[in-house]
Amino acid sequence: MNKDIEASRLRVSRRRALALGGTISLGGLIAACSGNSGTSTTTSAAAASTTTASGTSAAATSGDAVTALLTKAPQCVMSKEETQGPYWFDVDSIRGDIREDRPGTTLQVAMRVQDNSQCNVDGSIGAVGNAVVEIWHCDAGGVYSGFESGSLSANGGGGGTPPAGGMGEPPSGAPGGMGGGMGGSGETSDGSYSVGDTEATTTDDGTYLRGAQTTDANGIAQFTTIFPGWYMGRTTHIHVKVHIDKKTVLTSQTFFDETLLDEVYSQSPYSEHTGRENNTNNASDGIYDDTGLMTVEKQSDGSYLAVINLGIDA
Image (cartoon, rainbow, N blue to C red):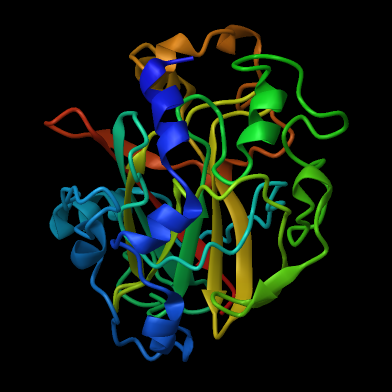
């Protein structure tokens, strides 16, 4: 395991992350769930410049660059409902920078929520403002916050045998609302993002690489994170939920081009997680769907900008 990843896992706890700033409970932004008025509660640029728990400011991606790349990406396509997987819980954290101190290649993520009943191909109408977009994904070593012991077991410390029956996720035919991480708690979210979504039972108090943003008047939510790693049995992915009026209207996953994955994973700390050549890729993944493929551009500073238009039935 990369030493920076190992050290950061020892430092971060959920209580520490929530106490040190750079995160706001959705209670402080309750208007975000009051409906799609089209009035932004937070602009995408502000979302990307949120201060992290460690006090480091994330670099905001130009709004023009984000809009231009979103225009190149497929639009007015209904996003596929996917399983939320076994590692979701309601972290109740509105923040643009979700890295905490996780090492890895910087990834700016921009997601635009579009109402497919109104959407047009140039994106000028159909944008859904004041939706809550929530994302979560594993770190560069393939581990999820809140589930380090289970994730490490699934990876065998970086490439072992995955949990029986799940390959790190429930079967692809499982319903999108299925929680059940490490057996599942049967508990449900208390309404910070949505009401009644089934949460998994966490094994630790980490919150890294999890968070949510409200969409602006253009339907865009932006995040600063790291490029996700991989774990046995799954292709690389980011989980996403879209919430409107405290109701989850989309649970899905987004993916990356295999050539890009090869490029990113050739560098540290990803290169120290060995065995990917024997792991699942996009073509063999039972959950992968082309509608979730992100459009990505490398930036001048070596980071990446990844965008996707999320089509929903609002």
